[in-house]
Image: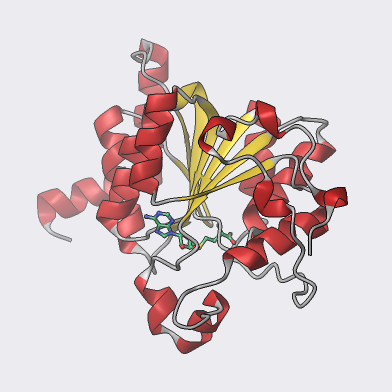
Length: 258
Ligand SMILES: C[S@@+](CC[C@H](N)C(=O)[O-])C[C@H]1O[C@@H](n2cnc3c(N)ncnc32)[C@H](O)[C@@H]1O
């Protein structure tokens, strides 16, 4: 059902409007759906911390699902009087093995003649929240999206990563999008936890390679993009933080095997 009331008002200014991501997905309602904001750790305190500290104008989320985390960020932005725009990258195909293999998760995909139809649920949730002016859904794989961002010269102030959870997937998402994050911008994500060792390995490896100060808190990771070398004082603080985070334990294990 077409519904002009909830259509987007200012889509011509959107970062991806020229490639057709113009809010037209919001012009139809789905009266058979109700709001369903099932997600994972979508309202963790790290979101508020990032928004208060960075006051981002443009945020990209990789891995959006039904929109619980992006809508939480949108609420925070509003409460801080920020006019933040969000680009949500997701195939909306459940491109993560567990989402297909576990029966309870697969039903969320809303298979329709064998094809996932969960994008409709996302659109419904965004419309119900009245957030359609601020959220551009980009239905594409993250690797292809990274190239689009570079070719269009899109620079973002914060990047939230919650898509593929295998080591190589997370590492690629970090590495391919890093150039599109503004200097001093925030990179953060979900599932830095024992259940997802690939996430931990990828984030640790990336931060070690780029010499970045990683912060972790109950399953979330966060760091600030910094390409300029650290001052001597920052370097000293960084080393102290690494030791505090279990560096001694790791060093002992390396030297003595226990
Ligand atoms: C864990 S869910 C995201 C949850 C969401 N952030 C929340 O808090 O509710 C992961 C999502 O990532 C998407 N995804 C996985 N790998 C992807 C990839 N390479 N490119 C685009 N989307 C991907 C899946 O389709 C799925 O919707």
